[in-house]
Length: 376
Image 1 (cartoon, rainbow, N blue to C red):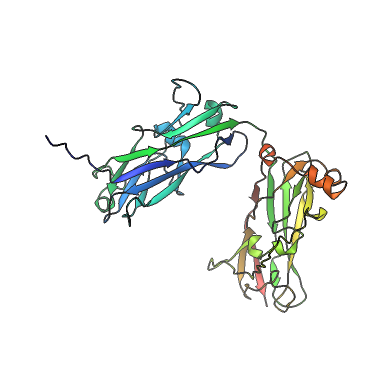
Image 2 (image 1 turned 45 degrees about the vertical axis):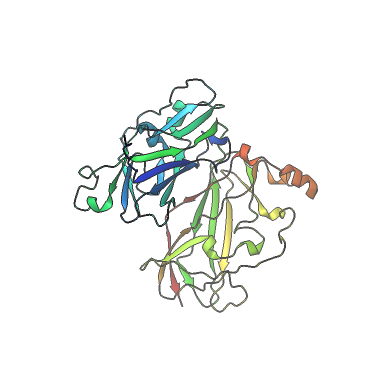
């Protein structure tokens, strides 16, 4: 008696969690897009492209919305350490989501991943507070059979409906790890905002300076001090390698991005001081913003290449916005005069802060695009 051949799935999903930190914190009060693993897609097809249809797959970026994937049953969430723990399911969304899709090209070698995407969620979403308990640990894994996920040959979809309802549906294999994470409700850090201000004209030659300002504000009534060293707004001038780190500037007619001058210096050692200069710490509160000013040299200036108008053309209109440089490193509540008092050793000890406990500051962009004209 011969054993019937087991059909090979044309697509397989694998949930990868082994590269994530053990018991990574899931913060209910800190707004940060959280990556909870990856879905890797492999295909057995060597010649034909395949389209994957999947619950929770976003249409705006390559990612899987975890809340939608849990609602559909595609993923399972259980409380760790409990025998026969029931599956945790978030409340239904007000508007049901549509099934997402992505194209998977033929494989170029056996077992090579064709497509992968992150599993994403906003940990501050109200739905999480309804189902998760601070102090508990949960396990996340791919369901063996629940949720909608199937595959269609892409060439069969061309003359059929876009949702694939009329095409032949093929099952998709599933495998993977269980990812454990702990839930915390530490207070949210203060919010910090950046707004760009610029003159309406930039004189490429002549004595009239072109100075733009980035104003940093916050929603915090309590003052706090930020360490801005090793960012483009540091007093250590070589940390600003290009104006493109500070502003995103484009030709208003063509949309072409301005190619600013840049300078990169390599060292055999770390040129930064052991502890940042006092001027690399700023105190900020709701009634005390901080303004960073940067003046660009005109085309006649040969002293500094980085802060130059080179890249701009005369007679053009440009639009600019804050580029969103890397977030500030350390911060803590208090006054600058108190937090930077004493010897260098005392400062270093005082600024040895637990950023996981405090939370990291995300710089949020404020305001509309700023427009300016260039004059020869």
